[in-house]
View 1 (cartoon, rainbow, N blue to C red):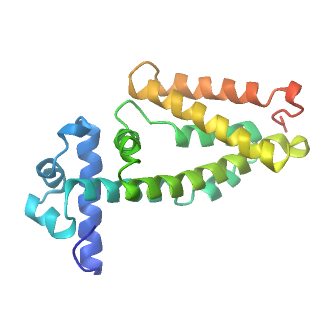
View 2: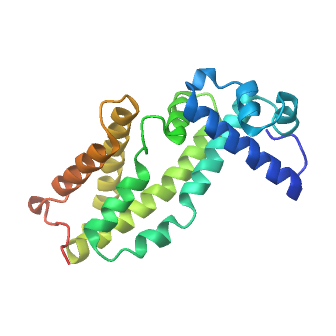
View 3: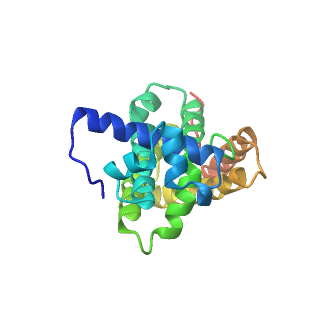
Length: 206
């Protein structure tokens, strides 16, 4: 847990540390991202980090929450401002997938997933973030399908399947097997297949 009191200055210092952690994660393998590296990227000393966070894992947990908050901020509104269904779906996919193989948020979640069974904090952050992503996906898919949208249960199942597919594609980006642009096109093709006419609904072209 964070161990310093909450003040405006303290909040700014925490953000400095969390941004430093993201920078360190982008440049290094996560196993090499220790407190000294986080502190260096934040322009601080390790003891300054420990004033605000009790451990490396606490920094990483707070970094995951911070990163997801940044990704979620204004995302729903931005997607709603895209009227063309296919373009909105592409925007969602682009926002969801890693920017490149060194995307720090995805690198961080790779470790977080492995800790879900023993780290309730990571699990809670991941669950809350996934609820936001899934809500935006369902709204995006409903916009794409228009009057041909399935039932709520079918829509939930579709969103679950598609999220799993995006997660799998993301792993190939992180492994260097796919460039981000190719990953987006692969996901778009999968979306078209998922929404194929044989299921009774397709992406509107209007």
